[in-house]
Image (tube, rainbow, N blue to C red; front, side, top):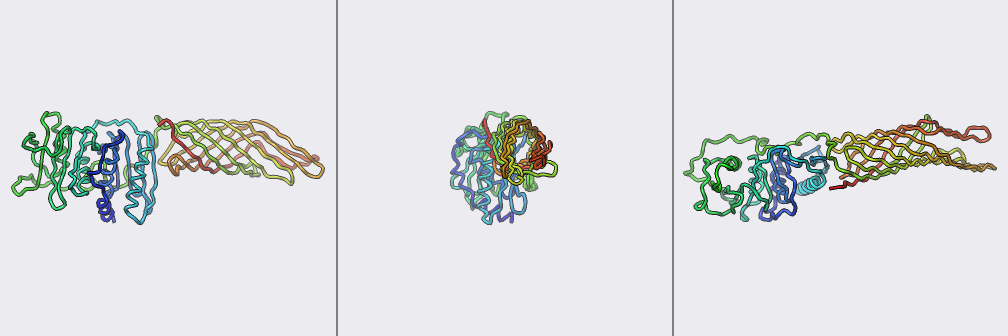
Length: 428
């Protein structure tokens, strides 16, 4: 199945000659993708203007694309923040490939890049002859990354440039020149690359990188398989996992906690419903809320609760609680966040009685305090489902008619709510 998927992906790869100038300066990406997807994805991200590096330490963003289960894939981008999507499997393999690319671009746009900590690898650009087969560009790009370099898009200055050409029926020609040079310069007018002939493009790029700084001459080398060529002893082919460091098959690195420092500012608003009980009596609760702050981190929390409580005959009670507090998201793993919060507010208790000759109504106001513990699961971008368990206290309420108690609520209350919240990242 993976061989069929790989063949279809390569067959649908766009012509490398169509790659244009990058519109914006993009963060450097370290890609960990499924084996059948790696080469194609590398070239498409390069066309979108993203530099790619084989070193996770030198990357601003780590992007993982891998099967998550029998019927879905996971796309996750990790920088200062983490953004992840699930992509459902389709019967059309081309649709799967394009959906994974679109979700990867969404994740790269939404995530907050980090500052790369590792040493900056040598930068290498690629120029592919227009008459070359579509499969040549992704293959050469993977070889450059296997050499440990940072692959830059067309138009971005590079220290070295790899020029490749060759038809489907002939061995490709690979030439390595200085980044400031143009492809197609005759070897007779350029100093020869002094390294011995090496069997793979990745090894030749490694040798060219090693020679940087040792000579001011332009580095150039053209290699074709010729009957009289002297080739060193064959090198054992590397395993698939070693073909491109950091681009191995499999699901990629296990998602880590999103750090608190540098987390994005998020404005979020939502609605929730649930039930609140006071000892043995449950009441419905409707909630509107808004938060603003860092996620993960600390947010200000504004909430309005409406509790139309159980009625007794024609006796009705509605409690409205506007409250202000703090919500903390101390932990976020993939798309799930832990929620902790406290609220202080004013409980407005309104009641009406219309029975026979009795007509009475009134409003009582008292303080209210509440604590919440819950979870938020991101379903798309910053939009999420929230589940919260609540416990609080307010004034005890008792209503009597002609000395007979008809309604009571105790001081302490507890219950839960389920809701949906819309979010928007600010300050990007």
